[in-house]
Amino acid sequence: SFYDTQHTVIRPARMTPAELDAGFIRAWRDCYRLPRIARRLRRRRHPGIAAVGNLAYRLYSRNLGHDTNRFPEGVTT
Image (cartoon, rainbow, N blue to C red; front, side):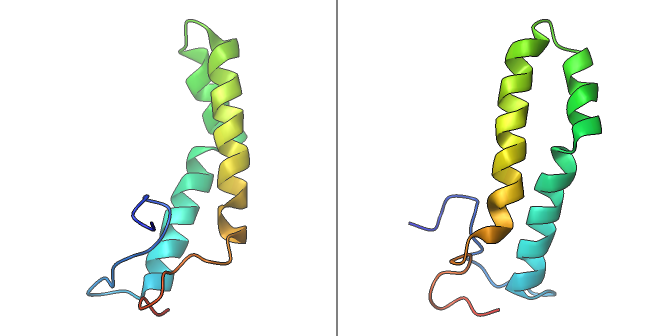
């Protein structure tokens, strides 16, 4: 199923599905930049545990754009 928040399944009124997808990927990558991760870790009681999760999401966000099946059938770019 493509209803997982990781795939564009709608056609927005004022942008293309590709523009929506690019913004989604940009937001993920911006959120998991190293300076942002460092800022979040400073506020954590157990920064080591939080670092593992944040770095895993960073790796995931860097691979988002490599998914060749970003648009289900019927949602054209």
